[in-house]
Image 1: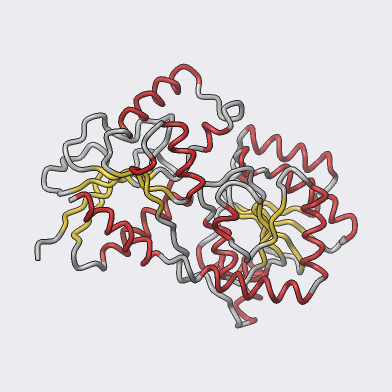
Image 2: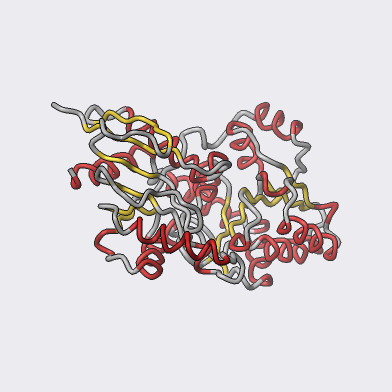
Length: 347
């Protein structure tokens, strides 16, 4: 049997490896590498692709040139989301960005199939590119096997000491981009912390320690609300330590205005952490009945739901069991299998 020779193109943008898009490329590659029908290789953007049967671009940015105009081989492109186009005031593209979006959109139309992470993203892609929905296929991402419930107290104690974590804390893992609604999350935390003085908030991700206008704005909000001593900002955390942090958290919060998928939500649920997420975009699609859903613009509602989880033991146990079960439905093996079916359908 002749193997399908696939080129997976390393995105020409630095920094993506530490985000969900980097995880996607890495885990998809590992899972496809196990398939007997496939011979898959990472190649640099712009490399010679003559020897390959099909080329897959696992990353797409509307305002950077991540795709070639000319397609010399059958092409698959993964578009994780088009969130900057949903919030144009918050992600201004300027004249150059406008030109690049025109080129990117034109180039995207030349792909045989567009993969995306959710039905919500599929609808956005069809809306903003006017590409036929038949050409856009939803393939859900997976959760790494490392994310699990840790029962060994000594492992958790070690993680708690390493990062000086408090006994009770809310957790968010991600970035400071507008769509993440970090300011709304902090305002809700400020409300609940008035009642629960022993509760803290932990923010994980490079965006929370690297200088940016968004971070400066966030620090100002934290200062105005007077909760600076209750919020701990951590940078990037190694994978195994992150599993421990999820296990130690009381609640994981994903209060985004929009998400293409939301990998940290799955990671939290797989680790037995209770999740409160927005009732918008892809998040209800992802969590099913395994999360409390809230209006991300309603801080009172968010605070009220945090209190439900903190005080209702029955609710906690039920949500925890549902979350662990739900997370098991999303595997990288399944993602690779469905992606391989797309490759076969093209060839």
